[in-house]
Length: 409
Image 1 (cartoon, rainbow, N blue to C red):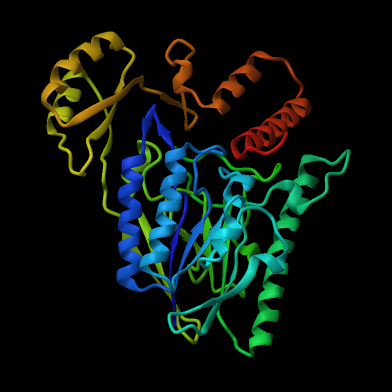
Image 2: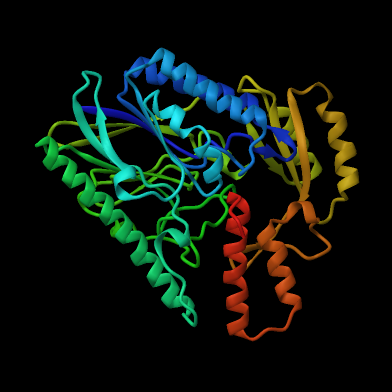
């Protein structure tokens, strides 16, 4: 029997509308430590995006190292596998990887060889119990060579083949290890990417490996007994046996994400490789609430709010175009004086057009727009033919991804 916890997308150091998430992350990590100790798991797998930015604030680094230190002190037999995500800096994670390995903590920050990514895991009895293919977020340079004159379609197909080949190499290495130990151990893989058909939330930026938007779950080798994925913040599964899974982020990264329960996966693989997955619901430390409607509706909803979590409730007010923001702010300020809530922002309601949220230039401020939306608006005002427009969009995606992860441009 091999038992482990699958978590991802901690985003330590995130600034949420200019507010720190430090207290929320502290409570999550404390809860996670207790689960690891109580359940006596053999391993913890963190599938990317440990930090929110390539240069995390010092308090976020302290949270990371304090957690790993306490985990080692309380659960010495628990192995830790951490892979880098698209938000993580390879160099930042690498800084401590050699030292952490002495504590049975394996950090795979960027693309490595199949030999470096694939290794044995033991159970509490120090017996070989599983093999992990610890694949991090793969960047375009990791899986393909750029060829001049390639079409976008050719680039995407080359990237898909490159990723598939990378996983095949780690599988081959895992099978070699099984032969060496003369066992047929279950094989666990990790990944940090968008899987075709996966449900994104507003807190997730589109992730691209070069020009590839998503990777088919059917392209993972069938021999993997469990695939622990990161990037999508909502818990979901793929594959006939539901063995390809996202556990989601431990705290909501946006107001819409607060509607979904936050979980960690408790995974068991028995000696016959039979898979059992249980969702461990993470306690809510802070309520995020988006309320909208007329001023009367807003008042009613505000009065009904309570601080269910230990921390003060955060609220956004969404107003329609008939209401002046200044009037709404003044109205709400009086109501909230004695309530255990904090209003983080007021914003205009975004009307839906052709299934997408849109607003006019007058209705939205720059602070409410994403980088992608700003870029799209600039493109609208320019006159490019369809081919150049497509190339510009692909170039923007690649540069934006590099900027997020702190890569050299």
